[in-house]
Length: 434
Image (cartoon, rainbow, N blue to C red; front, side):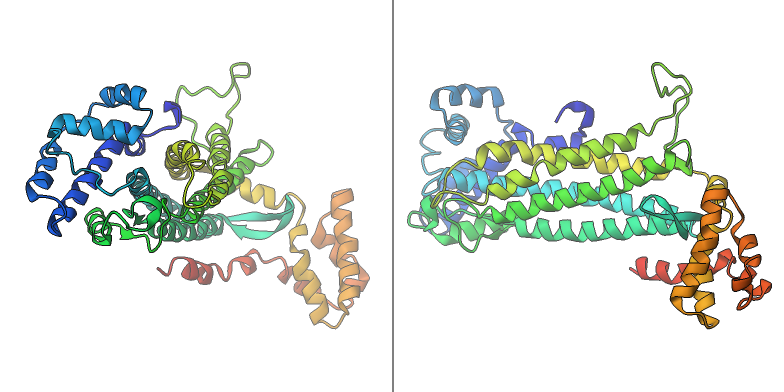
């Protein structure tokens, strides 16, 4: 990803120096395991650790690869330059390149997951704080973009909290699924390397052995991982879209914080645009862009091919770096979101009590009318509000068919706003009971 949408902590996970350090640890631990079961001299295994404090020269490895046309061989050649050719002669014994590449890739994905889980924790905290703050801040709920019935801003934040809590659980499960390593040699049969080597290396690196690999770790694991990132990205866009709607001029129930000196438009000085949430919508698309290629990587020829390799070299860094940035940006937006309760109330009252139509409908049916007749009466008066700007309660009180079954005070009761917030505490208990 470009620096504009990148944060250092996540970028560093995917740097060449980090990758080569992981490759080195895999090879060094493998040598230790071989020495433990007598496959190589202990002195040779110990010698490999002479490079434990070495900063591997990325430019030198690239130089070697220009000749070898093979990145793992280039790295092993460079490692031998530090350890000594004779001392390093048992490095990579019985292993294949995928043992290093796949195990490293999964370690990087796990580290990326840890950063993303931290981000989700921060976002969850911000959402919960705003939910508590606006627990009873009443606003109009909308279906199909049209006024429906009252809800609260706190419930909106709580809904997003619950969604992101599910995403955190999904990511934890995806991280666990990706936490495998394979040191099983060519075509995964352990013909030239003992299974103990794999068990030892995985234990040292916080992985568990892949139960059965070919020459690669099965890519359904990775497909599930990137699909999870895609779901999280979609949830980010879900929240961003709600904020973008609330910031529309004719709505203005909330808006992104507009800092001193900030400019909204090069042409129109009055503009305060939802640029951050629009940006989040775009970034979410980029993360989801990785999902289909990850799914297609599941299908490989026989015991291995490298059709997945170029895909993963791109989507691994790009998807995680982008999602890291997006989660951090969304957290900042939520923390600093400016909420306008007065505008929420103004919008809710825009149509003269029309939003209480269901309450009136239910009251009429409870008073003895059929649902069909009750619906007809309520809709007849509601249409006067839509088309003529009438007051809904007044029209109901002037309708003899309505007042025949409901007294004026009974009609008034149906317009009690607190009726719609009476179960907010119950919902909050369900959402925040963790």
